[in-house]
Amino acid sequence: MSKAITAATWRFDTPWNWHPLDGEPPPGTQPTWPLALLSRHGAEPTREQTAAVALGSASGGHAEELERWCELTGARPAKYEG
Image (cartoon, rainbow, N blue to C red):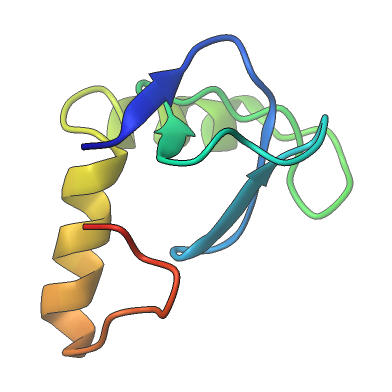
């Protein structure tokens, strides 16, 4: 079971590649939803981009999203704990 970390700043590179910006997360941790977009491609996001992320992550959670990606791709990343 994954634990959520609140109030952490995470970097998302791909659906299976995320990590906190302040170092390595404790084992089994993941981002807490809803997400807040702070930067996109190194720049400040637009209001529309920020709203889209907030709406897209308003329900569900990171574990559910990872499962959805696994089902869509038929793959599981080596580090995935689900």
